[in-house]
Length: 360
Ligand code: NAD
Image 1 (cartoon, protein in one colour):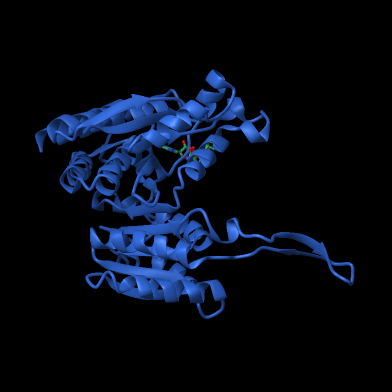
Image 2 (tube, rainbow, N blue to C red):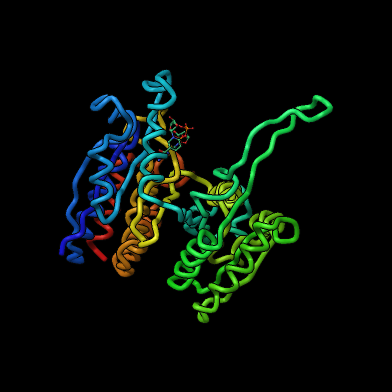
C-alpha cells in the first residue's frame, strides 16, 4: 500500500528549501521503490492568505490522514501585525497539538567537514552525532495551576506546576529507548531527581521501561551536569531523553554546537511514530526569495522521516551520505561558507545532493 506524505512548504524560505527536499525525496522514492505518494497544501502565512486562518480544517484532516508530514517554516513580517490568535505560528502549534506529537527529536550532528563552523574546538565536536528526545506536550509549560496571587503581606507571587504522569513519562521514555536502539544503544535520561518530585517519578518510570530494553545501556544525569557535559565532552552522549523544559534548553544548547541552524533537522512524533518533520530554523524573511538559503536541514528532515516513521534505514543513510559527499566536494551555502570552499545557492545545493544520491 502506498504511503502518503503531506508537504507543507509554509512561508519565506519554506517553499525554496522544500523544493530541494522534495527533489531528494522523489529520487529516493524512485531509487529505493519506497511507494510514497506526495500531496501539497498550505500552512502559516500562505494559509492565512488563502483561507484566512493559519491551518485550515481540511489541511488538518489531510495531515491526520497522511503517514507523515514534511514542513518548511512559517511566519514573516507580512503577518506580524495580525491578530495573535491567527498568526502563522499558531498553525504550527495547532498541528503539533492536534496530531498528538509528544516526542520531539532534535539531532545535533556536526559533519566533520564543518567542524570549523562550531564555536567549540574542532576536536571536541568533530563527528558529533547526538539526539535529544524532548517531551513536547506535558510538564511545566502545560501544568495547572499556574498564575499570580497576592500574599498576605501584599506582595505578588507567581507559580507554575510541573506535573508528569507515569503514562506520559513511559511513552517518552519508550521513544528514547527506541531511538537509542536504532543508533548507538546508549540512553542518558536527564532529570533533577535530587530536588524535584516529578523527576523522582521520571527516574523510577524510566528504570521500569529499561527492563524492556536490555540491549540499551541506560544512565541518568542531573540537568545541571548535562548542560555542563554538553559543552565539555558532547560526544559522550548518544541519545538524551528529558522533559519539556530541560529539553527545550538543552536542545538549543546542543544545536549551537554544530555551528549553523541551516543544518539542523527535527521530528515530532506521536505514539505510533507518525511524525511531522521540519528544519529547526524559521522562515528567514531576511534571505527569502534570494535563492541562498541552506536546504540541508530540510533534506536531512527527509532522512529523519525515512528513518523514524518508516524504518527505512538504508534510504535514510543514503541521503545523509549524499549530504556528506556534497560537503566533501566543498560546496557551501552562505551560512556554512568558509574560505577555500565553493559558495552555492539553494538550488545548486539541492541539485548536488540529488546528483550525489543518484551516484551512490
Ligand atoms: P530564522 O530561523 O528564520 O532566522 C534566523 C537567522 O538564521 C536569519 O539570519 C536567517 O537568515 C538565518 N537562517 C535561517 N534558516 C536558514 C537557512 N536555511 N539557510 C541560511 N540561513 C538561515 O529565525 P527568526 O529570524 O527569528 O524568525 C523569522 C520568522 O520565522 C518569524 O516569523 C518566526 O516566527 C518564524 N519562525 C518559524 C519557525 C518554524 O516555522 N518552525 C521557527 C522559528 C521561527
